[in-house]
Every structure is written in C-alpha cells, then in structure tokens.
Image 1 (tube, one colour):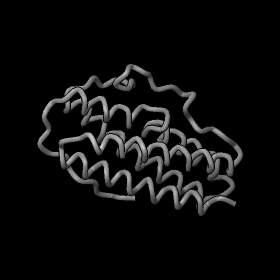
Image 2 (spheres, one colour):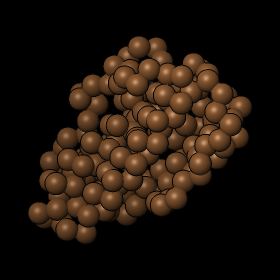
Image 3 (cartoon, one colour):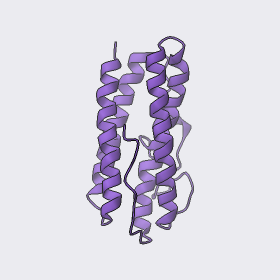
Image 4 (spheres, helix red, strand yellow):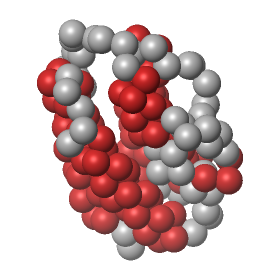
Amino acid sequence: MNQQYPIVTDIVPSQNTAGALKRILYSQDGILTSHLSYMYQSWLNSLYDKTFGNYLQSLAENNGKIFNALGNLVFAFGGNPNFATQNGRNWSVQYLLLSKDRNVFLKNAVQMEQRAIKEIDGIIDKLDNESLKKLLEEIRKDKEDIIKDLINFAI
C-alpha cells in the first residue's frame, strides 16, 4: 500500500467532482465500507491468525487515511460533508462485510475491491483535475495489490 499519496492541487469547486468523490467514499463498495469491514475482520481474525489480522488492520488504517483525504477533498470541491452519494443514497451498515467464515469474507472482499476499481476507473475518465486523477490512480493501484494479497490469504 502506498504510504505517501500525491497531493491534489488546482482545486476548482465542482459539484460533479465532489459527487464523484462521494461515490468513491459512500457507495456500497466505497472506502467507508472497506474501512469498517476490514476493521471488524481484523478484530475477528487477530485471535486465530495474527498475521492475517494485522494485515486487515493495516488495510483498515490505510482506508481511514484515504477516507480522511477524500472527505476533505469533497469539502474542498464544494460538496456537503455528509454520508450520501451524489444521487442522495446514504451509506448504510448493510454494506459491511461481516462474515465469520474467512473464505466467504475473502471472496466478498475481492469482489468489493474489484467493483471499487471499476467505479474509480469510471470517475478517473471524467475528471479534468490531473492531480486528482493521479491520486485516484494510486488508490486504484493499491486496490489491485490488495486483491492479490486477499487471494493469497485464501485457505
């Protein structure tokens, strides 16, 4: 995972950009969902497999940093700092991946990350802000690496 993401510059208020960032944050497969899902799974798994639990904790922490950065960017681009996507859909706890079966969780987490990558790709193609594109490209690369790692953790 990237420890130093690019800084976004040349911010011009744009409701479209703010809305796109909110989709990345609050959609079913968004950053908030992955952050909280990985946090829960890290607690659940750290008792049985410390290595796996620590890895999930690192994912949760990284997603927390991304959540903070993109949340600030939503505000910087002129969006409302609420937990709703541009089309008004509120984030819901029903999105969380809460499975005690490790392989079920891993399968669902891989699918969540794959759908998130598709969402990010669709947004990158529509952006004018080059520094924001670079940030989202780095986040996408991290998600691709996460998929590889999750597959390797399958039993």
